[in-house]
Length: 338
Image 1: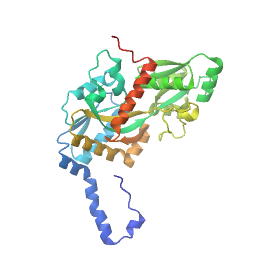
Image 2: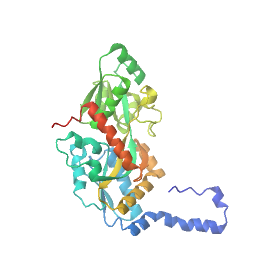
Image 3: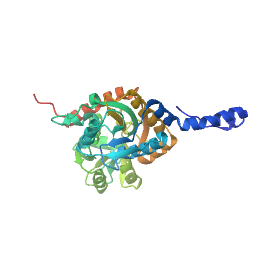
Image 4: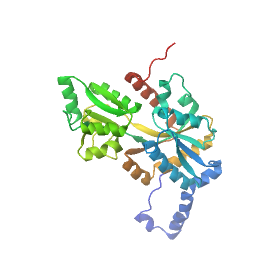
């Protein structure tokens, strides 16, 4: 529900109308609590389990949402970090919790494909988990070293066509590798994708000229661009980022039709009551559509992009197919033997 601000016209309405508007304010503020009382959810503390380390984008978004839901519901909502195996460790922990909605997996794209890289999958993502809501999306910012012989994407494409050879690009994580692979396919540039275990080290090495370019989260790369230590090539999304609107998309910069985003979303165990799923989604909708969240998102380099349980399950299935195809192309998902 979008609440319109009360402007000058409202100030000239009859007193009875103003009194009605004022009387409605407490009900609007307590709407989440009233819903919780009606549905029986939440009945106890809620945990948003982030299967990554503290300080990641998923962790930051989860902590903002948890604080606001605590205030909205009057029930404590906490964030627990349980990292390991690209999210598999934390995801298994949610699978072992009761299917009542009080333990929520708050995760990103690797959740949908990382079990395909294992010999034995401990769960099937969209069979064992129910999508609740997508809360935010994020883009990768591709940037070139100041030591590289190109300053923008078109120069890179043209240089690679004329001279051949390969361009070293630093990435950290399977999703970044997949997106770099997609850009390679779209532009024809022969990227030599250099995997790093540390995003900050990948960015540092690009600034120092040890690699030609880097693809990483906006929050990590943008300060180096603004400090004139890296040249921005473009952001990976289909539209420009709220955080760096001055930087073009890669599609604008020369990779026609390109557009990939990461996201942070909530999932619960399959079998969770629909009332709990609806209450979780309604709370997250209220938080992520607020002006305060929009300001927070801009600071974090992410974008508000709420999608609820009416549309997110189908979108998550489409995302799974897309990411899995990319990882197969990149060679990270191997054909199963036998």
